[in-house]
Image (cartoon, rainbow over all chains, first blue to last red; front, top):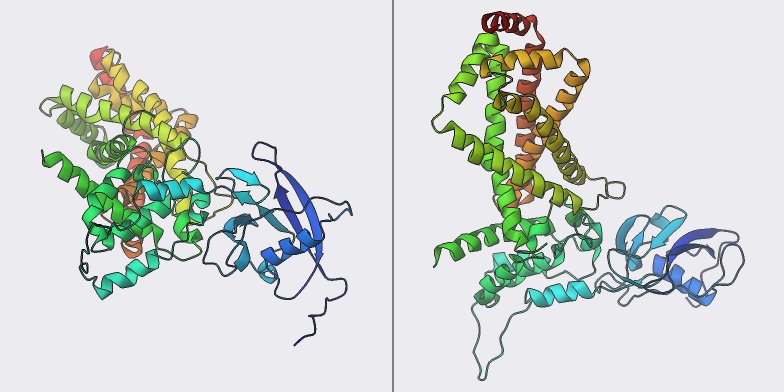
Length: 256
Length: 221
């Protein structure tokens, strides 16, 4: 169908967006009223504002800045707080949102500008816990040990993590007074420790979580598991790693 | 915070169970003897406890020091959290906030309660036999009854929900089903232990404790 979806005359959607001009600037809100289109999501609304950056009061403004990439909830780039809940903007359908739609950056992270945040701490956390499987050698190491299918099934669920940061935003213990690493990296430790080759570096990953800024900051509010857009069993991962770190603690104490 | 916060947090968690949770349950049972056996029953229980071997060291290392560490470090843990219940109104998130709130209430309550009881014994103002009467005197003031009820419920909630968290933090209840069943069990424990404390508050308010107190007073007097 080449014909464009007709814009219903008069029907509009309201957006209240929390903006910030630079990392140090104070945040402020701006209101926008956009023509409604069927099936629009928060990203398409932001695109509309980008095309025509005019506020509800008719004054021109700068286009709202945001990040997005895959538009199918697998990349984790468009995380923002929509009507109070951190989630992916691409899967936030306007039809299912209460009006006016309030959009704000996930301010647990440093805000770069408007809705763009810096999730670097999550990638640093993945580096700290070595969330990978070392297979490089100077010669062909041959095939690794096989993974049981029953294990692969639950490990696959953990591998869906897209480092979007929603779990950190929902967590009451991720803030500047606490050094908690956050749920995502802990679940990744469980994933890579479950892998038969990754398991060879199990102790190393656990010991990182037993340092300052590791697993100890978890306070069991369990907001993470309720918020994860990928439905990852984060609290199960945390409890499982609690078990493993406890075992590691006694192992370390008793082995010298 | 300097040093390894993992070990500090683990110690905090362990001390909450051994000895503090054990002490709290023991305290509830001791107090309940006031409801079941009146002043005689209560005094017998107090005597039995004070007859324990090495009671001085038990009190210092089994109660006082663990309580100080758990309480002070607990205040730091409470300070570290950003409560977000208006945004995330889930049951467990409420329990998270209540755990910290009840911890702070319990801390203040225990300081007050220890001042009124154990400290008075320490400075020689009271004997162990007069504690039942002291509680009666405290409870003649209805404000104290209300404050004690709040303090006791906060302490028992902190204990019951803390036990639930302990089982998660040490990796004993891992899956969602285990954690759900655990929460039912600890909710039940909360009700039972709260009932023991509330019944003992009612018992201390009865005239029985006023009379024995009078008797003790004339006897000492």
